[in-house]
Length: 69
Image (cartoon, rainbow, N blue to C red; front, side):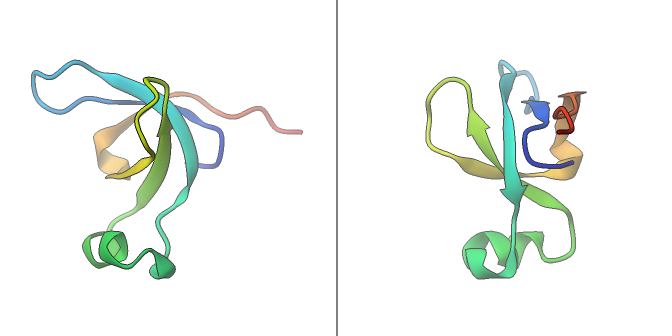
């Protein structure tokens, strides 16, 4: 996944949330990096206006790729 990809996140029976990939979780992300060190994870800008959070790539469904410019 890459910057600008449209994704959906759903946890169990909770309502799905959609957002855009901002960037991968990196070493300088402290606590997030500790959890994501061995699995791909990404920061997401959510459409519902909540603050950006991160999620594991395996928990995300790609809806559409960002357009290449």
